[in-house]
Length: 143
Image 1 (cartoon, rainbow, N blue to C red):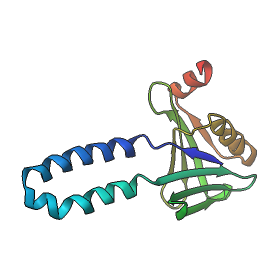
Image 2: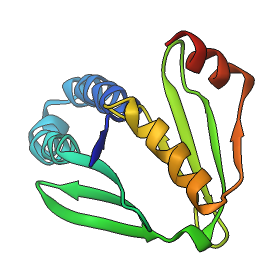
Image 3: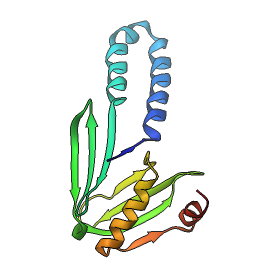
């Protein structure tokens, strides 16, 4: 099982904390009414975790909150239109599982880099079209 590290969630939570604190600090009345629920909501989102697992015949994507599943998606090879691999930032790889029906699954910043190689092997094994961007090929070559 591969764990995904969300890059934007911590940044968004930090910005919301700072902006929220500045807005609430302007008025003492607003601060007393909204500060506890506002920061409680931010803390609750801090415990969201994303997981991805590759079995021999299915891809499993799971979102958990405090260890309890919020969303479970099992994708069979027949449901996959194509696998796209691209560069997410300077040195990070990303993959997008485009499905025939439903929303695509973005796999950005897997904690274990071997997950991308395993996903490519899964696609080749099941005859799924694989597209690699030029930048991704550079990352494969050097990192």
